Image 1: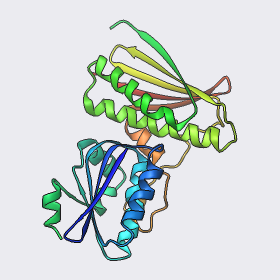
Image 2: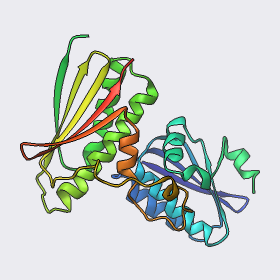
Image 3: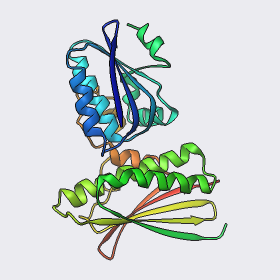
Image 4: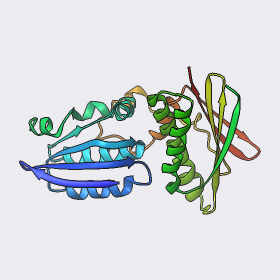
Length: 109
Length: 144
């Protein structure tokens, strides 16, 4: 699992690579929540994420909560058909903005 | 296709999840199962295997647990059975989140409880049996 973090125009961009399962999710959750603690606006780039289980959804849920209390926004980028399926099945899809590229996501702020 | 049955054994550790996904992806590819169906099968098994490892064994204080995945190729079906000797747990008796539950805003949602629903909905048929003191979760995917 690879986690890369940068900021652009005061927006935090977190790029994840690998699989988010119950083995890797605790580390991803800790890094994602820690790095976004002072951010209101976060983009998560999932382009290179090949697998997301319910443990991965939990990471998105925790991030959503942390950002929501600050009236911020979480945008997901590079969401594969498979990740779209699991997000639809669980109703998560309705709470996130999903955009095709990081460039276009930056333009939504 | 000739009926074929292969058994794989795993120690009850979250470390094995990745190799299970790789093995199942290979099995799906070998029989020409679509990418989407193959992924959904790996997801379903990942969710149940996680529960078996974390709750069936680790939380029950069993450190040397193991489980088997038995793969059967039949005419028009790929059947994967997950057999473990952990605490009996029937995912079919587990109540699933309702449509209403799934519309609860994420800030108010209970954390967890989605794995079993995801597993059951990601395969064509899901069965549970308790036989010879073993849990047997059966995942069936139609291959044509």
